[in-house]
Amino acid sequence: MLAHKSKPLILLLVGTVLALAVLISDQYLPGLPLQPKQLPAAVVTLGDSTMSGEGGGNYEAGTNGEQDNWCHRSAAAPVNQLRLPPTVTRINLACSGARTDLVSANPEPGHAEGSQSQRLAELARRYRITDVVVQVGANDDPGFTEVVNRCVEAWVRQAPDGCAAPLRTAWPQRVERMKPKVLGALHDIRAAMDSAGYTPSSYSLIVQSYASPVGPGVKPELQDLSGCPFLTGDLEWIRDTGVPQLSAGLRDVARQADARFLDLSLAGSGHEACTGNPRTAEGEWFTRLTVDWPSLQDERRAPHAMQESFHANAAGHTQLGHCLGEFMATDTPTAMCLPDERGNLRPVPEHFVAAQAHP
Image (cartoon, rainbow, N blue to C red; front, side, top):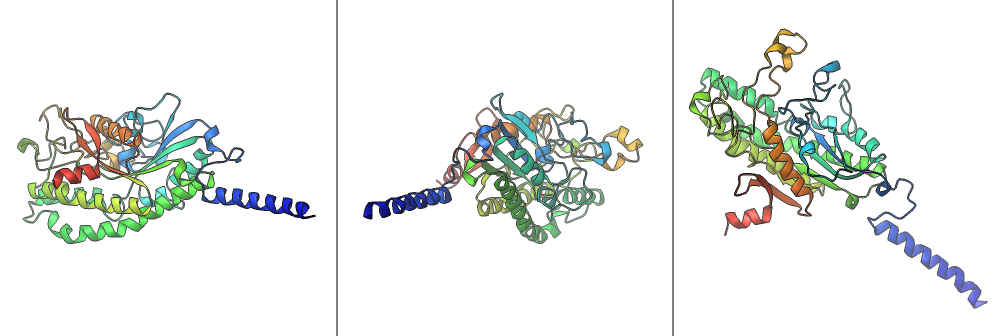
């Protein structure tokens, strides 16, 4: 009698232990209906122009103004520079000009493509997504493109205080207002992956910051409408204050979302627009003031004729993509893209950078 009673008890205990194991484990059990490990592998990038490949040229059909889609996804985009096995599919969902709402689950209506996180959820059912890389936030409250435009206006007016003076107080406030929006987008990305059966440890979520496209090393003959129409003080503020503060804000958001973080704030140093050969732009990783003259003759395309200005060029995307790829291959939680002895960008763990700065 006692033996008959103990058997159900043992089965109950075993069942309880297995249930607890499922609850506390981040690993998939065989037979899970949405088992992503059974699907072909893929890496997905989301976000705005830096991830889409803006400035790299050779844009995918359908993203160069067709049906008002200006996502400008380039063959030169960072995801296409990653060193991956041939069996891994590269998927670029990023869109030039995107704000966090477009990455989130419920964007404002009217965009040509809709929610990036919703598209991610669909892809996560068709592929075994190993890495999700996100770069977004600069087009929200910081309004980085607007800031660049204002700095150009300050150069035109030769404003004594440039564009930087009012931003010294306003910029940190803008970054703070941006942070919860980026965090919300990251939560929607997590939810999209959850909906397809993923757990947080079954893929890597990486947040990237931004590199400064300009700096005070501009050639004097290019510090005008021929390349980089900025006042020197504004160039210094963008590179040394604005971009690092934006990066610090994104680092904080990545920490809150339990995501890895790749800091690009110093990635362009010495290779900014207008710092290389004055005629050929050799040595530069970012575009100068760029005008698509034929587009100015088309009323529909004219508003986008300068869209490529001050974005990474093909060489820049190559460098950024290689740094990202090396970072993805490690388990380092945070790193900075810095040049090695040959001048190529490599991910340096942030604790190592800090140790060098404060020996």
